[in-house]
Length: 535
Image 1 (cartoon, rainbow, N blue to C red):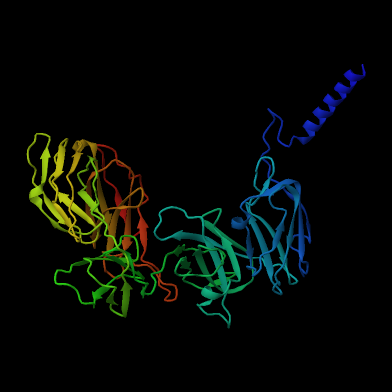
Image 2: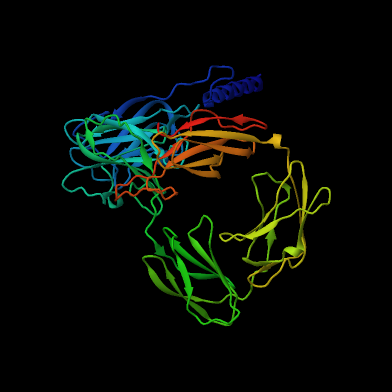
């Protein structure tokens, strides 16, 4: 009997402990969708004449912190961030220890964003703020607006928006070296909202930063600025977007070095226009060299036929700068010629390319042949690309056709006199009906200069046209997929998009994305959109 009672006792105790330990909702019960609530704050919310060094916030249930480093924004920014505990486990309170010296007569906002969640269901306490003032009143003015990336046709939710008070100590260079008077973010929206502002005149700047230090580093950060002075309380709602862009850096030479035997690289910063590399060293009579800019990188590649030398001397120059450099030569082995091509479907708008690791300097076309599926020879021409290490083989393509491209040994020679082995590729075409067409009418009644670009879903360029009046552009034989059209207002008529400059207070050239209808192309499908670029 005693043993039976003992077993029953421990069973009951186990059930009680199990139910006490359970923190989630019972099976079948309604899901808790309520966000946690702050029930007390010490010192109180919107406390004035604030002098405390610690703040305690209590909540009605257990809470946890998520992405606090990204979500928490303190305005004005503090030099030394506060210590916030507990982190890493659930609690019914938060403690904030202030380790910085607070500014007198200033309203502070601790904006936690959506960092505070309940422990069980992760319901966020959205846009939670704790506000206090070191003066005898709480500033109450507001300002709100929107930020967009000049090159991206979708919302970007990762901008810091800064306000700098314009007074006798203000200069435009403050954005490089001093933290702003106020800061907010667009983390939870494409919009930004400032609250608890003091009246006065301000410069408003938006940054997309690699490090959230609220200082503009033009080498890594994007910047945008509101063109007019922000006057509070007048400018509570801003009418125009802040357009964020990446500045072009002042031209600067990097450190040249040997990458491989017979290949040097010359890094640089800024625009590559007019950049020249001139060899000063004496060379053999049969010496050859080729220089090409590396795509998507600020680097000039320089290939040369090696000869006995410990170093090479160069002059690097452009329109405004000139420098002499010496590059030590230590590499011992040349890279043999490597060639890659692709078999499969070739579209009518595409060109067949062969890519190489080393620059090609000679092609023997008698050793290249293209045959169709009926074993008939197809005429072609070969073109060595001047910008990249690739070779174009251009030929007329017929629908529903198979092409066999044969390249015999030693048809292709690179700068080091390496030659190819035997190569063979097969490409085939589809029906004309497998493609679609967009006939775009560009309405330009003001006769402005526009660059019209057709882009695919990855924002890669498909076709570029230049227009100065209302015109119609036909995009034929398009692969079925989604497309985007944009118009660049070419203010200086140089046929390229120009970015802005903060110190010059120059905005980037305006980019207008077509928004009126879906540009998804389907097989044998024809679209006839109208793009009103002056709207």
